[in-house]
Amino acid sequence: MKNLLAISIFATFFLLLGTNNEANAQRRYVDHSTVDGVDIQYRWANSKWLDRNSPLELRLKIKNNNDYPVEISYVIEFYMGTTMEETSDVTELCINPKLAKTGRINGMYYRSSSLSNQQIESDDFSWEIHDLEIERVESCQ
Image 1 (tube, rainbow, N blue to C red):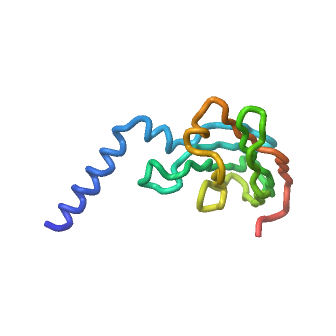
Image 2 (cartoon, one colour):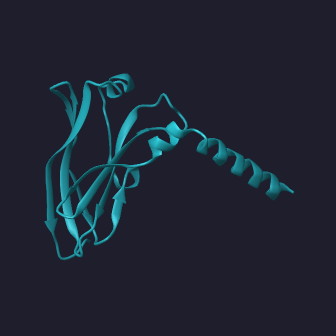
């Protein structure tokens, strides 16, 4: 009986999550670019899962479509209009062939320390990937 109740609550929770199209769109990754056989996708998410007022963070998903491993490095920059507001540290990762690395678990998330959620959601805000380097390597360690 306890198991049935727990399953019912769990199923109801996920059904309610699935009814909000805006929430579903926020969870999906959007294509950004493809460079040298590497797909880059992104999405915006709140930094705290159930807190819609928590700071927004940019999360990336990078997939290596090549038949060989690649080392990737890049910097993320946030802009308000033409003014660069913030830049990230260099992110470096190695991705084996036909695999992807995603979001928070791989340290591929970027949060502004100075911009509000309202500024990030405004038409004046933009972000860019800079200093992108993709290099073929023998193996990922």
